[in-house]
Length: 87
Image (cartoon, rainbow, N blue to C red; front, side):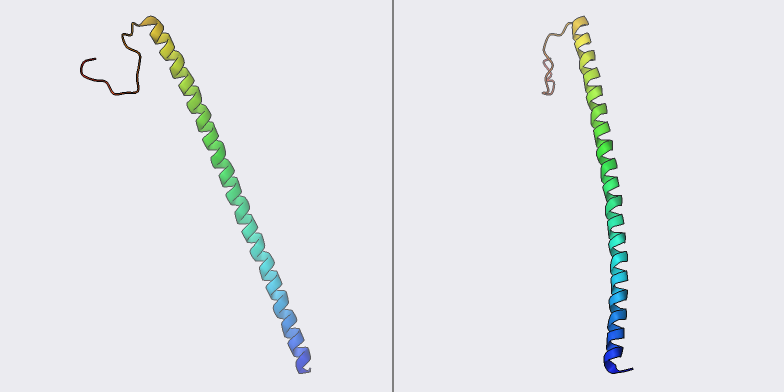
């Protein structure tokens, strides 16, 4: 075999191996991206469910508060400020 033929064969083998490795690397990379996307979607759904649960609980607490205001005498409207000793 001539030197040119050996170089061509060697170059072809290196190119083929590089191509196969590159394709496998890209497949693993895309698979990892897809897995991370699923994890992000699950986290987003969990946060949305928690937010809905919090809103439902807030509405229940507000309704309970309104019911209690109807049945109990309140001398001062509720405030977000801390209570003082003269209350």
